[in-house]
Image (cartoon, rainbow, N blue to C red):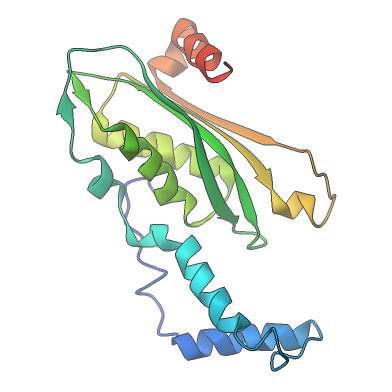
Length: 200
């Protein structure tokens, strides 16, 4: 799926009711040996379903709705927003991964976007079932597609619950992924400037 594609699958492509969803969670509670009718769990299926919808609401938004409004600027210098906090859901285990993203672009033809929009694009793609590699690429490709900048640089640093609480159980492992497009890919100087700024 391309970065600018609209995905409605979480809403449109099924006919599952809220009751069916909560019953499925009740079944899972039975599966692990729990009693979904005991005190403390009676409302858990509903809470879980509402939380899952909230954490995956990125399917209901598009990059176009976020990045289509631009402003004129005389600057052609790097625009960088770093330490953008994010939380996403790993599509392999439905466990969270979270961390920070750093997003930069080099304006072209004096076109810039409000800084909050960069954070919103991160949330747009983070609030879906994801792998970090694809998440990084989607953010970079969306900015490239709608802003047509001279270059885009995106770095994600994430800590994955699926590695911390199960499997290898490595508590202090951080995954770093990057996407460099345009001048950030072709120019070592531009890439080094970006990497230097996000490391400060």
